[in-house]
Image 1 (cartoon, rainbow, N blue to C red):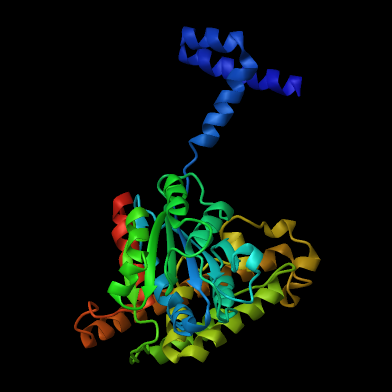
Image 2 (image 1 turned 135 degrees about the vertical axis):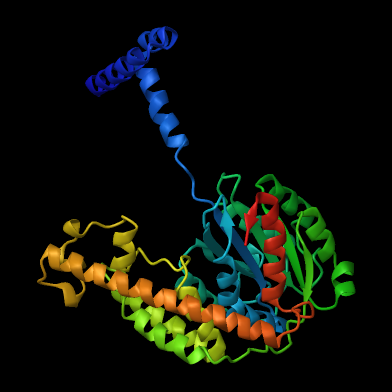
Length: 393
């Protein structure tokens, strides 16, 4: 190790002497090892960070919240699709979503009837799977407690350009439980987390229940939604073709390693979950799968190779799917490239059709101002708060 430090120090000293900076020459000569460490650490610190939109959803799963959970399942893909158009510093940010449930008698009372369903994840299939696993049962809704728990447990990160947003939805007074919501929200603000409140009921009732006060303290938005209303989905002439492309898109995935077969099945299962809610939800999901937010490097060989997370020459035979066993490394590389190219073409076609689809829908809807559902509330708040950090659409 000492030899390595001396070699690195010599390289630094030589570089500095070439620049002719005598003061820095002296400083590095006095403590070459420390100087080398500083250069290495500085290069790491100056590496460009990928900005991320982090959204924590805290959903009340007590008996009266079946409508809220239904809206979350139905509108996940619309939210993802809208966020796929966001940009910060001329780059598309990552998206991570975390999920908590609270107010459910099935959850331990010792933990405040709270459960972390999912930590921050960019795996959209996993997020969908977890949402569809939620069930409701009557209980005590402790808003302050679940906010504090999510602030403590989740990795919110330290990048000041990240958009860190918490959305809590429910219909009981915000003041219930042992943890004071004001203290919890103060702790959230210290981590640069904006707290948004969504009351499932009338605007005035939410104010009297201190939901608006929570949003004001949290520098977020106070919103109300009609959680029991039916969601109207618009059929368009482009839906059938988008779903045909979705079938072709699924065939471009190459499951590899231990997660390959499991996650291939999960992908199909979440397609089925979407269509079980409504055919239009399945279309929204297909559109999401055509965006850069749908990433599957942990199990799909195409994404893994493109993102430099896997090198084909380092894959073992056991990690390969059946269709690639016995193939040479060159043959595997050619096959992966072919699937990647096919995928890009299919995704481009889906995006084109979606643009036409959106135009068709907007012509039918005069305005979204009267919409009072979960998706509208979340998107409106995100766009307002994203502007503070120079995110644009």
